[in-house]
Image 1 (cartoon, rainbow, N blue to C red):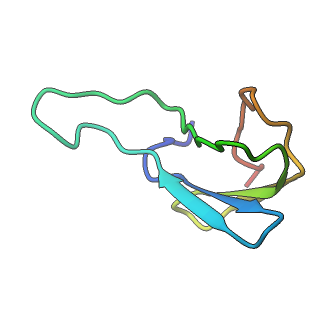
Image 2: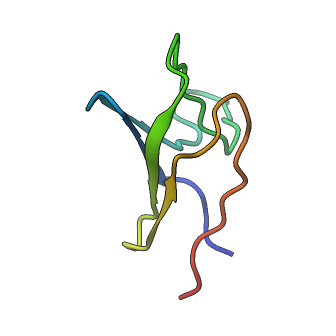
Length: 78
């Protein structure tokens, strides 16, 4: 399978703001990170879109993803 390490998630809000997170693994001594990305939205109730990019260039876009829930993501077929 494709490793999630290095996957970049971009969250685009209706007001034009955006936020980016990247899945990392072992960025400090003896540490592991979950293969999840969390965005704190504060009072925001709607997200315009989320773009998930893999290190090999593949990407998927979620239009208006529901807030306050997890979205399981798998890379698109090669």
